[in-house]
Length: 447
Ligand code: GLU
Image 1: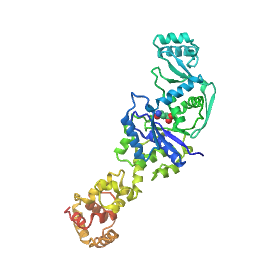
Image 2: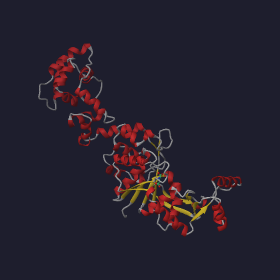
Image 3: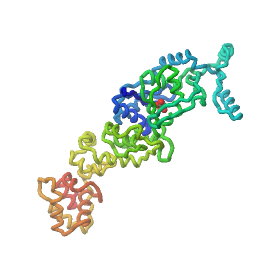
């Protein structure tokens, strides 16, 4: 296979959400796996809604996921290309001027429906004479431009959905240029895909219905259409679709809440596939696991609770080297020993702060009065420095023997005194971090 070129084409009208991340990653992983190129294209021709700060945020959020584009283009800077392509379509009589107002079109549709006809544009504008057109323009009407569809069946072999076919003749000729001269997405997208040599269009299945028309436009412009793959969409737990307005599911807010990028990426890609939803350690590993052929055909539900679980699993296996800089930045010491001790107990990395505070102290001494004597005895039995790796086992064995306590009666008061909590990371790992001096103070109630 020649090396593929793919693109992710958001309109910068909001922050990316996890569903957009799915599309971006499906493209990026496809390119990386096959030694190809990944283009980030901003569909920003809607100048009213597109914003530069959203575009910048999209670049930043993708970088957080590890997605680095090979090229970034903006449709707002490519007007000449669209003008030239429109000229080419006019030259082959596939783009024609129409003058109907929205109200006139609406009346036509109603008449068709009343006669039980499909509400398809009747191409009346193609029958206008030059004089009639001149009259309409003299009235001040500005034309919008429609693409003349060929009435044929368009077929493609979808990378996700298998063979597809669509009778393009059953559709209205799509408007490609509005009355104010601005272009519609379906046109600019094709001009760009052709110009940038996009070989694979991988996008959400909400675009399946556009594909037949787009294939016809590629061909009318003299280009071989790219391959298409329409992946299943993610929905929120209530079943509704995700949109850039669903702020709480934006990548930005997930990042701010402290989720790991790889947990988010793993979930965004693996839900709704035949692969197990377990976190990958790198995009490379994720790319090896997922393929477009592994996606299910029905929508997948994004459940924030599942992300929590995945984040926990990710942290529980994360090597110290992957996290040390962030722990330093959080003012957490203790090095690798601390990390290995607490990582099974974290949902978010920020939870490490609370464990570090438990180690550093002060910890409010918690002891039942009837355990005080026992704890004082235990304190006396703490091995002398220096402590080696087995200090906890040695100590507990001595406490057991001296006090005759075992099980909950032994471990609970010790954990409570040392950490102030009923539960937490293994004491075997915590004790050396707390250190002898603090341990004695806590056990004897002088914390
Ligand atoms: N801007 C379009 C969207 O966000 C791109 C669709 C496509 O990938 O062709 O839906």
